Length: 131
Image (cartoon, rainbow, N blue to C red):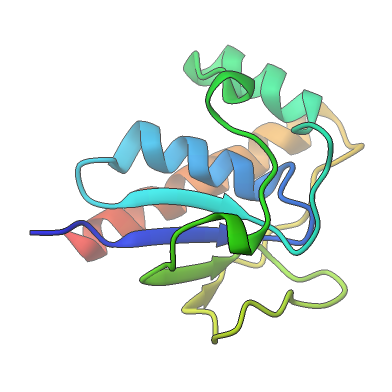
């Protein structure tokens, strides 16, 4: 059976959505395919996210991921917004869920770890729902 494609979407595709893609691949790849994208891109992934994900999980996001536009990824079966602080990006279809996560960019490592752990819990929940 084909695994569903899950897209994690935020505006810049440099922090929360990248973390969700990495954790989805790391923790749930046998259940769903993970992608991340944004309505804009950044030249590189958030360096605090890269450093902390490497420390917590041994995942090097810069080796396997880059900032992508929604048009750069396959059409998702499930689209999840990371949290729309100002406005939700338009992706040409409704979102299946909004995880409502604060952007930890520019905040302390503790804030990053808190958001990463929230994303991890949501990945496990999604994995259980899709099994």
